[in-house]
Length: 416
Image (tube, rainbow, N blue to C red):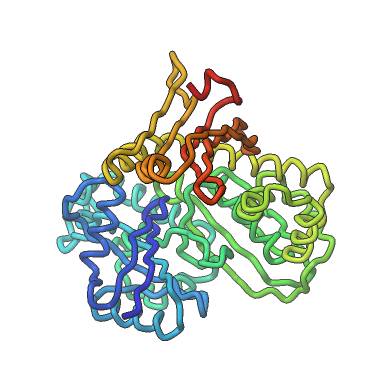
């Protein structure tokens, strides 16, 4: 039976749920597993959650509300021959208080929203609507075709929800009305990435603390987007958006050259650099020119490569924290083996490691000559060191590995 690897985006984390098939998948199990991995507690979540699945073959997103719909989506992925499915799980906001407005004089969150005796209710409500609406276009129909028949209070509740921004599966950026972003600074960075992605020049016509408007610099191009802060004055929502570009891609984009900074280049090619630490920067320059039509100076490329390699060193450093767990596993699954870890004090940091499996010791005693030689090679990783090997000769005069040691250098103190 075909199985799919499930990757869940929950809040700001990417969580690997593992592999699952259509016979063992359901909404409650998916949400439960996600919350369990996120909180490290097996408690069943009591909150309601929205589930969305990304469709890589059409760059679309489908909302899933039932188990039958989820199984149908799984089968569609299997028909397409895909082995991985990306899911977004988002906790629904508790809007029960705000949506209960059946009575004309009912209180919502301690503020009276109706009645002649309400003091300042119009000012509060109008301020909320102003913050949500921002710089809307000619009518609210651009946001919702049923807006004329919608209660004003219900409109506030709907506009507060929004859809949080996330990149497409292939890493691209797409905007839509109602999309929310964490802050103005992050939205500006997203517009920078979008300009590089599309090869266009954007003009920031409005750049205020709570309002941001961009338009395409090309003459006659109608592309325009406007966003403003929500009621919390931090979260930003896209209010109007015209996604029609009537201009051609800009080559030798001066603005893109300025915006393609070291941090951005490093993040775009981090995986490539980590898998090929010796890659020359000319290759990165060619890929940058081919993919984004952007050319930058060599010094910026060298700095970007250096920044990515620093991240590689950090990944190596994080691996050392798993050594004790690995030693415990060896002792449990292969009794009789010898594994020793030496730490430097007073701050416990890795110093040396010695490892010899039981089968190696028995093989040496049963079928090898009583001769041991010590050989070593230098490690070229970010932390250096030497890998020492204790070698013996078997009955066929072949080399027989007896033990290995990772240490600072080849001395009798490091081996003893």
